[in-house]
Length: 186
Image (tube, rainbow, N blue to C red):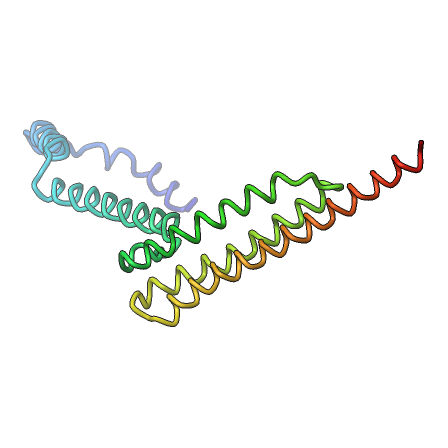
């Protein structure tokens, strides 16, 4: 590199004698202005590129929205969506279960943790029903799934009746104990 610099410095006078051809600066300015003009124009090719990118972004956004929205609402289908007869069955049992929940909530529990545990167990039963609803999506006319859903309702009502009986017995025992205690206190 040092040799090249040395050669240029020694022969500088030989390099400086040549001038560019006449009109060189005008041709250079014209090429430069053409280059700048072509950069500023918006061609059909550029428009198609931008349009395809916009379409891809919109389609991917719709796909993401559709997939996440369907996951939120994809809890399965209910019996009422299968047929009107099953709609009546589901309405009857859901009303009965709701009524039993109300009765259980009215009881005075000695310990609030017991009530929390009981409600958690009943909610676990609901998760089984949600799985059955999801199975009904894939097999909407499968009698086994429909019967399992009805049996689930029946079992849940039966379990809730047993819980209510036990709560009533416990309340009666507690009431009897308090009456016995009051009678011995006098």
